[in-house]
Length: 275
Image 1 (tube, one colour):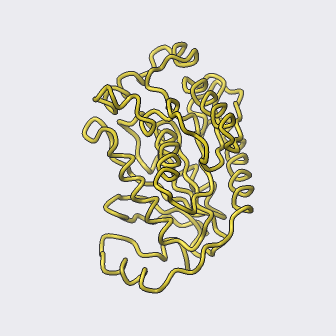
Image 2: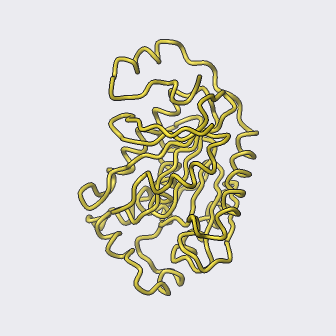
């Protein structure tokens, strides 16, 4: 039975969605909710999480939002959570993913995890990700009334940050060595071109990448009323299954790890992910 719990990890409130009993074979997906860096919340990702949570644990953080908390606040908070997961879980089947702004953060997490030598990340799932603050693609220019320009200005108040690979993954010059990627877009999605350009660059740099454009007029790609949602869920499940099959369970952590967590009352202990 799927359970939803409200937790706080490293000071970050989140929802844990998944079965009550898990094992070393249970994948963990850190999912960053949709939005434009300035809005959205973890609860909005619950339909997707509950649909995937029969055989996976999903962690849905309420990451900091601009303009009150511009770049890199959301990335820093999400990265601290990812480090906690990789350090405390006995599974090596850990994934990052997200939609829209959350897809940007997921791509940035994969880049930063590689740069800082984090081990155990199995893949990245990017759903209509916002990756290019320049907004110079055909699909973005064709999107009349898109509020993305204002959102980017509030997320990146310092112009220099628009060239930082963690803020704008599409401009990253080093992509080799990243974990496998699944990139999903929609035919009429404003982020379609930048997402597909990023997927093409990942492939050029030798990163195993699956890219799929869904022929739909609906945006976002995943929603309760969207006819393509089932297809998206099917592709995500298959990707997680494929990548998880190529990983090995992590060695059991010493008991002192759980004891350390128990000393921090506002932080969930390791049983968040294992029993």
